[in-house]
Length: 224
Length: 212
Image (cartoon, rainbow over all chains, first blue to last red; front, side):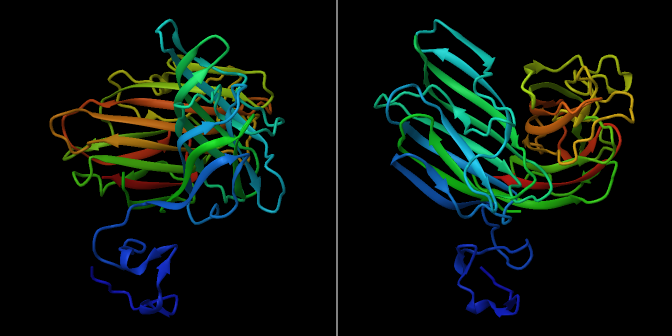
């Protein structure tokens, strides 16, 4: 790969080993102009967080103005304990304390029982929030700790570093769902906004009861 | 699913449309348009939407058939709805079919308006008493499939969330919108345009990506 850049911000390019964690050998483009070769993948892995009977998974770095859109990929999230908990997220504003921001949200779920006795899609009023609630926002509700069950999905967070606007999110999850009478396959669709114009720099995930027994959360940024 | 950034388009002062006239070709089978912090340019507006132009043609006026639904929750907690949207605008001649189109040629709506009347109708007659949501925006992604095909129609999906107000009140809503459909032409598409249906587009950014 040709490299036509001699200096970057006054630093000799030969002295730069990494840019945003990408090594010089793998850095193929900068602002789409400086390098030749195949453009890089714009979905950049920032960090990986593996649960191990974790009461919460708090990500306290990497959420900043580097990217305008962040994605959190959830792989095989498995809860511990019973009580049909939900997996949720909350955020903390820059300079604030506690994961307790005001969230305005909506939540719908499509369900289908394993015995084909019921199916449908509904708006779930118990899973959404008003701005006065300040609770962890549900991403997937009614989980169980059966050994072979896990939930997967993606949460997208827009422009968390804005100092002017609210911060929108959308989520889509799929997995086994339980209530007191039956087991279901369920897909959930969430959307809403964190109702603050202060930048968001931390995010937290947890189960409403028990803990996150196993699973992985990968945090990505999308190159702008 | 590698994403490749093709171009960035910023709106920093009010415009009527933003047209992307290069980069949409056969290089990628799937294109994504990441739209963030879209803000209307006027105190009243319609929905944000897109249209395409076929290779060798003129005008953003391709035939579209689509569906559009919104999950709606207001901040006072008194309203929770999920609706297929096809009737809001039927009384507004200029906006008819802007939500879901049947072989229509209007800009395809991908969100809910940041302002609407007391009944939830978007794109209504302007009213100076509209409630203004100062920090409200709309964010989302439009995915366009195989625009270079000369055999098939072109499918699209959109997933947006919007903070919006309702006329004459501080009744602010979160609107989560899913739109999908197809551009009913077998000609290749090489240009795409975005705009607010009424008024102007004040600010926001669109990143265009190719998916390989």
